[in-house]
Image 1 (cartoon, rainbow, N blue to C red):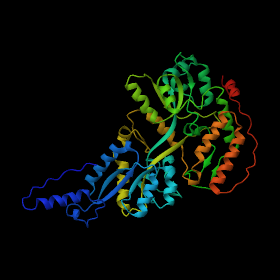
Image 2: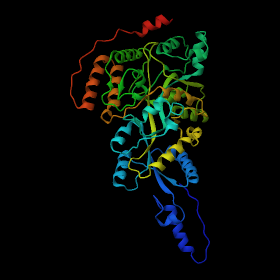
Image 3: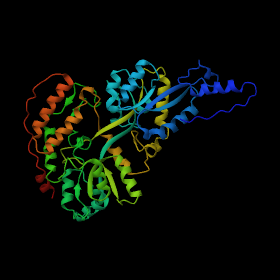
Length: 454
């Protein structure tokens, strides 16, 4: 942070005054009792964050806050530490240079709360209804029935489609472009069957099948780890007929979209989509910048849209996962009022510019983005499932990702989910139990769905 230099001209006491000014500028946690209080009685609030993409936005917000608030000022600290939360905890317990506010992902809030590193938020302006934050954002910052952080920005998956290719598909089916946007996987396959693909198109629909963030939505409507807020160890739902059905249909998709789990990673997929090699894909919001930069550099020319992820069928629904990064008031902070003041100031300060300054999508409603593609990701976020806060379930994503890989390669979805449930019960409760096998759901064959929709 850059502070204004104060130049004092005085003949007799120039050295003394300069020294006192230096103390007033550099003193951390000034409460008015130090020598710097001759010039300022403001309390310093320390804000820690780990993502340097936030530098410009946080700097501007801190400068504006410091210029407008007579009681507090904010110092920013970008912390490069692989054990970021542990560093916060250590500084807080030692009461030495601790952060009053820090930014962290919602899946770490459970661990933070258990360590006393959070404070209950009482803010009716921002949380009183769904006008500012959607339900997904509020669930993300809820722990034990209370708000313990302020949602700042999120990441979630959405459906990307090449408008030129979709228009060609729509023309073949005598539909408009808007009506042709697929709402189900059956629609995707029907569109691909009606598509006379150009030579450069290698895949109609392709996504990173090896990453759970781009696979979760296939099963997300029918499983739950921790309840709506992801913090209830007694609310674990993984093994059920709807979830099995989802994985059975997911497995069938390999017959239509031959994707190699070992060679086709996310960055390759997005670059191929930008190059016009793929008609449809699943992506997170970072893809918007990747594509925009390629277009600006002249490497590609693409017209595309972003929409919610398709359901399997009209009856078998999907739901994506989201990660929300949030502002937390440290429970160890002695300046709770000031910390909350700055968090609320930040949420109201230039959020319309947040995406352009950071490349991150705000968790707030009603933001008008300079790039219209971002709106599709926000629409996806609204109905998303926040990542679980259960520390004991930290391996869930890895285990679920492995389950998807096994099913994609041909393993039985029923048995795969049954074993996953046993593993999760053991990790969460410490109880090694035998989960009885449930009956397979009625068969749902994608081919039969296609014939009915033709």
